[in-house]
Picture (cartoon, rainbow, N blue to C red):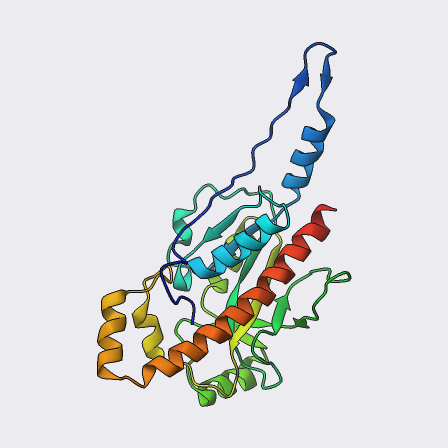
Length: 248
């Protein structure tokens, strides 16, 4: 599940600014400022589908002392991607978030990387392979199995086609990183998408109505929430470690 409660409802934007500080007395530029800005310029633009993914990555970035990495939220299905008109056209773009597994070997919280990424110093192993984009939720084990056979992809998302097309049009490097929130043999209840808005924020009235009509939905949501929390922790670790390696 991509959102559980209102704590995942804020957004932090940190566009990189190039600043040069001068020592007027001696006529020397502050070398530490130049180094800091050089490192910032090497950072990718990180995109997520929903707020909880965005917040998990932002929190881990801040914990590791990275305060000027831009993390933007696109909305489910990248519905708000067109509103991000100020994205730099000279930076790598990383799409990061949760995904459903297609390959039966993948477990919850496994991280899948589609693209060129150095993980030589990473604390976590990652799977490497294709992540396919679907226009709607792939909910059942049968549909996941059919898509796996047809595409040989490891996992499925709902945003990458739009981002991949934009980066291709602008000649930018695209990297796709996902953590598994539901296994290939697990059913993802399609009602989940109706319980959140386009940014993944919960809709209290819809949630209350759904639970009133189907009390058994609660244990399912609790399990999905726990799986998402585990997956987000691994995702954020891999993403932030990769940013640190790129800036070193």
